[in-house]
Image 1 (cartoon, helix red, strand yellow):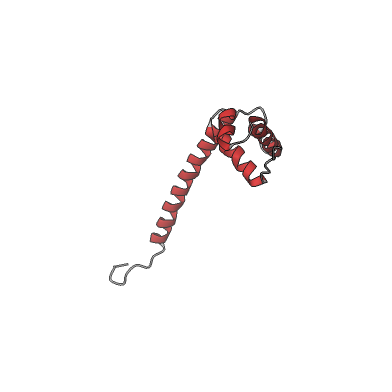
Image 2 (tube, rainbow, N blue to C red):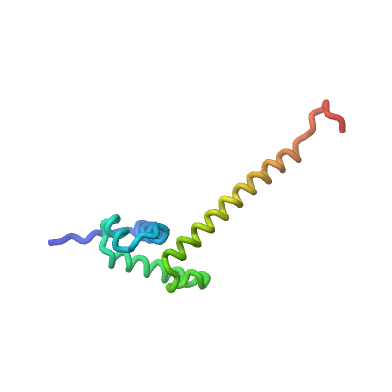
Length: 105
C-alpha cells in the first residue's frame, strides 16, 4: 500500500515560489522536490488563484519566466533603494552631528 505524503502550506508556497523563480521545466523541478509534476502544477494553480486580487500582470496567463523576470527586476530595485536609504541615513547623521568646540562657526 502506497503512503501519501502530506505537505504543509508553507512548503507548498515555498516550492511554487522557488519553481517560478528557477526558470526550470516543471517536470525537472518536481523531480528535484520529489513530487509528481501534476502535484506541483496543482500547487502552482492554487497559488496563482490566490493572487487574483493582485494587479493584472500576475494573472494566470503570465508565464513563470515572466514572473521570474519581474521578481528579478524588483529585487534589483529593492537593493538599489536600500543602498540609497543607507546613504541618506549616513548623510543625515553627519549633518545632525554637533560641531566640535574647536571648529569655528
